[in-house]
Structure formats: C-alpha cells, structure tokens
Image (cartoon, rainbow, N blue to C red; front, side):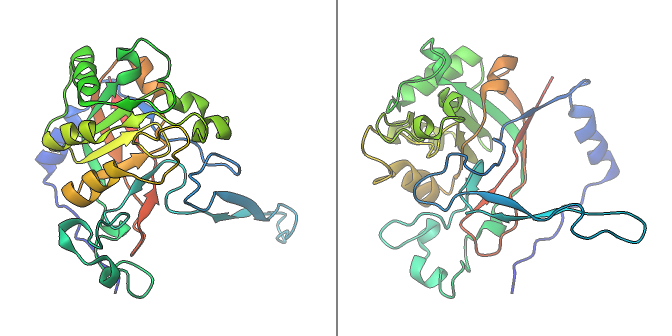
Length: 282
C-alpha cells in the first residue's frame, strides 16, 4: 500500500509567526531549469519528452469550446530534480543498512522511496565557488574542495548549519542551452569532491544542490563511471542531492542566505523526483 503521511498541524499563532517572518516585500527566485524536449540529460537516464496528445479543434464542444492536453515522458532524474535515498547503494546497502535488493523487490522501493523525500521549507545558503575564483564559471572537471566552500561561506557571510540546504554555484548552468557543452563529455564538469561533501555533511545539512548534471566532480573523459559523493551523501549520511539547479539569478541578488522552498512529487517507490525549488529573498 502507498505510504501516507499526516499533515503538520499549525496553530493560528504559529501560522501567523511564519507569515510575519517573511520579508516585507519578498521576491521569488526560481532555482529550477525549464523542462523541454531536447534539454540536457545525464546519459544514465531517459530524456524528457513532451508532445500534444490533443490539439484545439480535434474536438469542439457544442458551445464552441475546445481543449488541448499533452503527454509527458520523463525519468525521475531528468531536469531539476532531487535524489531519493533509494537512488544509490553501496555494497548492496542503502542508507541505514537497508538491503537494496530486498527493498526494490516488485519493481519499486518499499523503503526510501521518493514519496518519503520531505518537502522542505528551511534556510538556504548559496556557496558561490565561481565568485570565489573570480570567474563566470569554473573550468570543466574542476573539483570543488572543502577549502573552496570555506572561502565561499566567508565571501557570502553565511555558512551552512544543521538542517539547512546548501547550494553550490559553479556557473556551469550558463551552458544549459548547449547540451554537449553542459554535459561535458570531453571537458568534464565541475562539482564537489568527497572532501567538500564531508565538509557539508559535518555541518548537518539536509540537502545539497548544484548547477550541474551530477552535483559532484566529473573529470574529463571519465563520465559518470564513479560517483563517490553520491555514496557519501545519500548512503552514508542520508543527505538528499539536487541536480540541474539554476543559480545565476540567485547569485545576481547578492544574497547568500535565504528561505528555501521545495516540494518533491510523491512518487511511490521511486528513486527521484522532478522539483521546482525557489528562494525567497528580501
């Protein structure tokens, strides 16, 4: 049976307090990429496809009205998305020592499924590593280190803490409209290293996101053959990973601490979910 969750009950006073805590003139900054046929997609996942199943005029109602609708085909790890804890195993085990083979019996995950990935309304911290190095985008294959994240936190005046969501800007999303360049098969793709992942895990973050296809460093010519940061974050620490973020507009605000909001789809037994994350800034 699909797992259900009970809604959180808020008193009127606590609800008012949440509203009062919002900026007086909040600005919503989109942190997700648009979904379109032909957009960049990891070679490990099926691509996104959308087409109209019915067009206006295919069926016209007696009053002259007409409707159009679409068919969408996509993998759970396509476009801006979040990895569920079932996405990666190590030596046959998921996070918490759960047996991966047993959990996936029947074609969906009985534990750590995407429906158990929580919605998040929490403090977000932008770690702008491209700005640390004074470049629009880090070079392909660059490995973001713990020292880079330390410098980014100092530059922005905000360091991740327990329960936060940390988003790492490499500037690589500038290539999103050029799938070959963005996927970086020849050049590699910048991203966090195990060293940086351990730095984030030590601060107790709830989720980590990046503006690239895999979040972690992809050396030139290596592809997605080994993903040690996924093991570190998902399996060892139970920290969710978000990929294909759009962080250029957020960086342009100059705000490095903000209200982060995201709600994954409740795909029962899935390994990931498309998301539409936003930052609320003053």
